[in-house]
Length: 358
Image 1 (cartoon, rainbow, N blue to C red):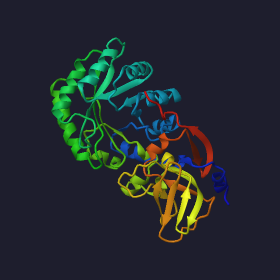
Image 2: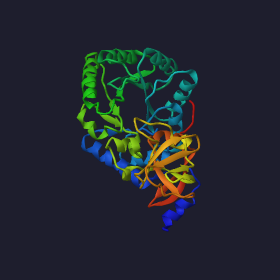
Image 3: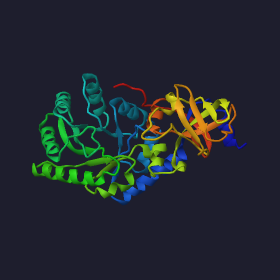
């Protein structure tokens, strides 16, 4: 048994492993692409929630980070002196969140988004008395049909509303498009930019995102910035899309076989509280590395069921590494991750930005 295998054998399971060698390679790959096409990189930290990994991204060339919650941003800023430029891509409402946002804006360069006047008015109410204005980007719906104004005209109208609001400054345009949506981003943002500039307002940033289409980001040259998230770890959903291979998956779940009740069936100690019940259009709940013949077809909270059409050839006590369907959710369900470097466990890092409400 190798030293690396012996190290993994001592880890209490279920455990989340993060291979930093793979993560660094993933970071460098997209940074090189972005640099070659004149794109700034602002990675989304929702995937890893680790200040140390954000520092790796910044040192590779990222201009700042993206967060989805105020509490995520607070944890990242508190966890690293290098994180000093933050975009929060979420409509922020409520007095407690706004109070935290004001405090955060006094510490770092901060931008947020809005797709409606209610959010803008709430931001203006608390930032009107601040020394420095808050940068607000208009979120645009370019096909994902989640948040975002529906038309370039609406984006221009909201940009003008922001530019008139006390305590705020218009920061640009933001979108999270569907996979393969570069053409839609280019069309929408080009028209929105023209309308806004015709009103005498500069558009300093046009930011898009999404790991599945990140290597096509240059097909929307109107964008100035890109926000990949899952790319740092990758997962089974991205392998299924052909975006990466199993060797590019930095996050895995280490599980132990706790029962082999039939020749073609085994039970592991990782269920929905570890692997997540997210399917993302897939069949099954993860990929067992080195065992293409095995499917994880059922999860309870603490157990996963492994099945094979032939003899499963596992025994109680065996440890397996599993690539989950969705890495981001796995990160949010654990307090700490085991860091792997050069094939060995080198550290245990707390997940600094998980589970916070604000």
